[in-house]
Amino acid sequence: MKESYFTDVELYYSEFVNTDKSLILTSYESHHLINVMRHRIGDEVYVTDGNGNIYLTIISHISKLEVNVDIKQKYFYPNLLKNITFCIPRLKNSERFEFALEKSIELGITNFIIFESQRTVARGDKLERWNKIALAAMKQSLRCWKPFINYFESLSEIIFHGEIIVLDQKGKISLQDYLNNNFDINRNYFFVFGPEGGLEKGEIDRLGNTVILRLTENRLRSETAIISAAGVMATSIQ
Image (cartoon, rainbow, N blue to C red):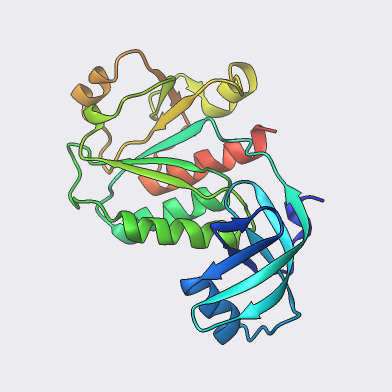
């Protein structure tokens, strides 16, 4: 059974799995399940643990603070993009930044590093908010790998363990061609995006040995480039 078959279901999240027999939904999840969607004991609901599993469950107990569900069936899905990390700068417009984050997750990206570039205007982390957006995007798109988000105050603080790829209009090779001819699903890749105005030359130089790729022949806004890259990967990496 594939995720695409779950087209007409609500997906909830639980981090409390009891030996493949039951799960516990707490906080926002239990509130939404009972008070918004009006589910009751005996109803079937789908729940993910954020580790690749989607469970078909039956509500067995409801209390003020949590909901218990019994597992009826379990489905597992591999994370095909697990070795890809998107390194995204804080953008001047927070709505555009959050939109890019949300859509990248809907397209299957699960690893993110958010950093402040030299041209960053908005500064400081909002990890709690970003994680809420990430969780909602995962459930909305019926995915079952909880995104991981890290934050650094500068690009130079990031320690890369894998291939560093900078997306830039000046790249001679397209992202699509690179994925078709050079991509190794077993290697780690860090895709670095620039802010409005791009990365400073010094920032790119400090990255060391990098691959420069282009997305299109035209210049794209940062958030458009991020989402476009996620879309290319979602359709190219199988």
